[in-house]
Amino acid sequence: MMYHRETEETFHVVCSCGQEYPLVKPDLIDQITCGVCGKIVKVTPDNLIRPSETSTALFRRMKELPTSQRIQEGIRLIKEGKYELALPLLHSVIHDLQPMREAFYALGYCYHREKKYIESFIFLGIAVDLGHPHAKSLFEKTKSILGITEEIINPRKE
Image 1 (cartoon, rainbow, N blue to C red):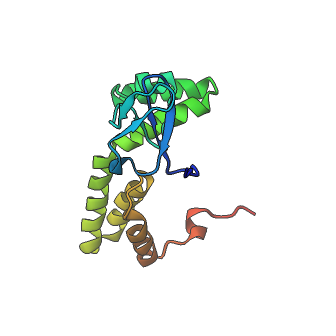
Image 2 (cartoon, helix red, strand yellow):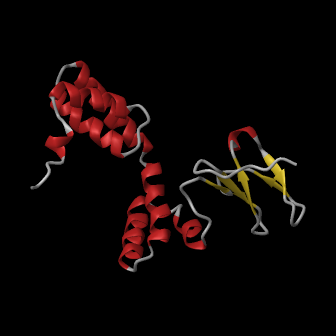
């Protein structure tokens, strides 16, 4: 029998009996058989847990709520010191903002092509913070064109 060594990129699928199973590439498998109850578990967005998510009841209850309510709940959990519960909720907000990160990247790219590097730097920086996969390299290139160094961004106080 082969075993999968779980990494940060490991997904999980949850059976109705509560048993969780790790999946490396959930898009390649459509169902599994639960080793506990014997049911066939179809892999759907409803029972698939992304690597940045958690299977807590709080998260499952909150993940379908509007972004603003998830942010409020995340802030409430932070104030209570429950960071491990707040993190998945706040990550789900960022995950939902993927279309927005595409827009920021596109704006940054357009400004870069028009040689408006300051505007490009701003929009690409936001796209990088939102986790756009291609924004980092263009952001670094724009930063280099503008002559922005780490000393300018984070000056050392002596």
